[in-house]
Length: 139
View (tube, rainbow, N blue to C red):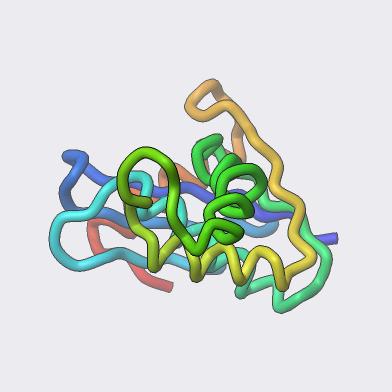
């Protein structure tokens, strides 16, 4: 089973952003978004890139984004059941939420939360490459 490590970066937040997907200690996907973006959006793009890279094969995706794990496993099912609405306010980044939720539901990915920035070597590597991507690095 492939084990991915993902991270997103925006600095300042919002500001220029980048994301990275690491597999076997090497980046397999790097990207960014033009203009001002957020850490939240970049984390989503990293997860989406990992799911796409896995190509339907079973995998684990290690992420420090507890937010996106909650979106994909807890909140989006209810939002979808309610025609993509929630009780209080709009769903931010709705198009991105829907795209990632669909990809996740059609994948064989298991999401694994890791605490960020506490010395986990693979999380630190994903963070390093997300920052490089924010500054323009590409594969």
